[in-house]
Length: 209
Image (cartoon, rainbow, N blue to C red; front, side):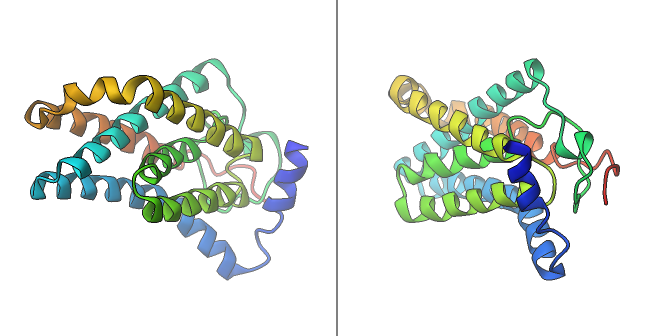
């Protein structure tokens, strides 16, 4: 079922050059755009001394860091080959042959989208829509199976709920002193962004039709 659904979506590739290029752009630029957005919100909050905006941005970065750390752990213990490693696929964009499950994009982007949706409904709704589109695009270009995307969303949603229930209120007093937190937040955010960007590094050009 997982592979059959992958084929249905991936076989749409190659029909329309315009659609192909659109999906490639979504895959390449959606995650960096989200990362820049979070950095901008944090910078704006610090510059304007808007404590609420700053704290919301910090919690988003922390959730992102936790989510991508869990992603690394899962990928270490459970190695699912990419679709283009196991099958002949329409591979529109070369990609590293690292573990397929769960999707880095699905987890990282949904962490940002859910965190911001909790406090900024309109912005969060746009980001959730972009995240869903990116998940579809990752299947379309041949990078992921549907279960990689859906699983990534589910895992992140559970982490989001746990973070809000168990950690958010306990962490807030410790990060209120922004002067001591800026350097650590910068490190977490840079490492999280690098993980997403590195996941797209083209290390293989195999298995294309």
